[in-house]
Amino acid sequence: MLPRITNSVTWQQAEMLMQPSFIRLIDNIRKLLDTSAWTGTYKDILIWPEGVDSETQTLVIQLLQTLETATSEKAEQIREHLATLPMPHPGYHLCLQRQEQQVTVDLWDLCYQVCFCDYSPENEKVEIDLDLIDQNGEVDWLSLDLKAKALVEKVFANLPG
Image (cartoon, rainbow, N blue to C red):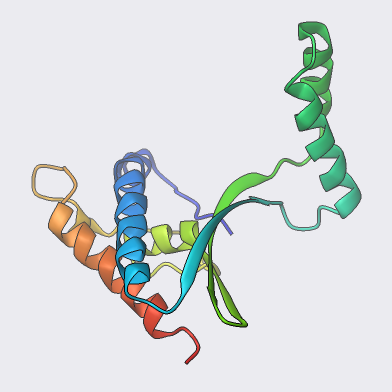
């Protein structure tokens, strides 16, 4: 479930924190993978609204693919049709593997855990972690890096033995 941001200040703070958080997560993952028995690959995924059946998902994907090469007239028709259908949002997973063991980590979920206080997927209302913003309203890079590093270390510490 995507977090629901309820005011413009929180939205601006989230916009400021999300990209640096994501970069710090990826960097800390890379560092731990360098010394780990686990290998990691990244995978783009589509996350569909709840209740969307596989037929509709297939139709939307086909329409999106057709849109890439459609004439301008046909593209407009496709966009109008897509506007009536449920649309997915992009997701990004880290797929960890060691021998026969596999673990998938939702990187956006981790990013939300960095940016928001006490984030959990079940609680869609969120509050920015103000410890990540300095007194000038800018990113507190040290706090951000420490929180991202701690979350990544926790993920790796909880991998199957």
